[in-house]
Amino acid sequence: MALENIDKYEYQSGFGNSFETEAIKGALPKGRNTPQNCPLNLYAEQLSGNAFTAPRHTQQRSWLYRIRPSVCHTPLKPTDSGLVCDLNNLQVDPNQLRWKPFPIDENKPHDFVEGLITIAGAGHASVRHGIAIHIYTATKSMENKSFYNSDGDFLIVPQQGTLDIQTEFGFLKVKSGEICVIQRGITFSVGVEGPTRGYICEVFGSHFKLPDLGPIGANGLANPRDFLSPVAAYENKEGIEHTKINKFLGKMFSATQTFSPFNVVAWHGNYCPYKYDLSLFCAVNSVTYDHLDPSIFTVLTAPTNEVGVAAADFVIFPPRWLVQENTFRPPYFHRNCMSEFMGLIRGVYEAKKEGFLPGGGSLHSCMTPHGPDTDTFNAAVKAELKPSKIPDVALAFMFESSLILGISDYAKKNYIDDDYWKCWQGLKDNSKI
Ligand SMILES: O=C(O)Cc1cc(O)ccc1O
Ligand SMILES: [Fe+2]
Picture 1 (cartoon, rainbow, N blue to C red):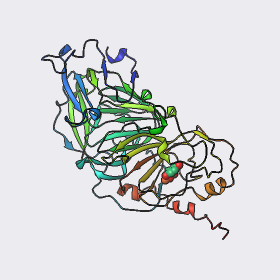
Picture 2: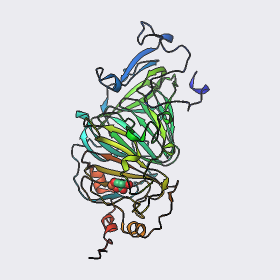
Picture 3: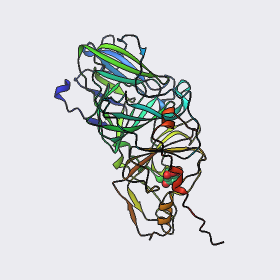
Picture 4: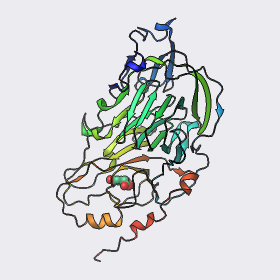
């Protein structure tokens, strides 16, 4: 069915499933991937998310059947777009860092790609190990323009504004409170309405997967069936000037082509973008005593080769009941060997009464001490411990990484909250020694 006639936002569900979907019945070849001539005379194109030889349980690839193949474009040329940096010259700062909300510059119309700003990172795409944390802002849609990333997968966390994402695989509408993953190589274009902002965790190595549940059992946290991938939807536009932007080793390149890249009539496979509504997260926590580690709120994890150690964990602090007895309920004071970048989607975060705002961020690096601010501490040690609720209006998250992150020049110079350190200075000696 041509684009005009379909529900753009139809999805198929299941994390990591092998899907098959056709926008025109019969467009998928039967019984083989590369027949001599594909149905409807489409071109077959494989998109590989892993080495061909990766073990079967990690294997991710899809076959796309398209009107013209992706290769029909002019040579890619370096272009200035956005403030993505290549992580080669990051600034080093062990302090507790907090950023005020990153502004959405409405005086300078810009799209999603032009509004990408790298904040922090470690490792490098060239060795397929590491992560980068970006902020995006946008005030306009990408028109006749698309983007694909050779460096890694994007986990996108919208904070303000809905993303209307057209991909080679079909459409995804992603609201604030939902997330999506668009993997390495997938071409997409982002439509927005009004001022838009969010966070991105880019992983250069493994793909995100659901965490193991161990003794929790077979259910809970993010359930596989709540992950949604698009159904095939194509547009047949020829004779246009379409710009394709590619991020390659942290630099932007641009090429043109005369047809829409969203020309995939059918596809099958398990390498495809997906979205997830964070309100569906089934939180598990202590119902006796103590504040448990935030790993219990892991939505997705991108592992390293070391068992149990992530390049990036995506963790949320979801609305939930707190019922622990004789317990200091907010996050504890701690020093962590992992790096913790936090963002706030809405509301107020349980460890910080003030100063940590939606659209801002914080970074507590490897072994950098941190914890609840003075007001939060003083209130929590006096609180009556009846069941209480972290309200639905609050939603914070963390990109937690085993890597030690450097910060970009931009992040070092802009929107830093110079007074952040002061939020702990009121913690007095209360000892009765
Ligand atoms: O630092 C933070 O606010 C994140 C965090 C939350 C929590 O509940 C326990 C540990 C932790 O690092
Ligand atoms: Fe922490």
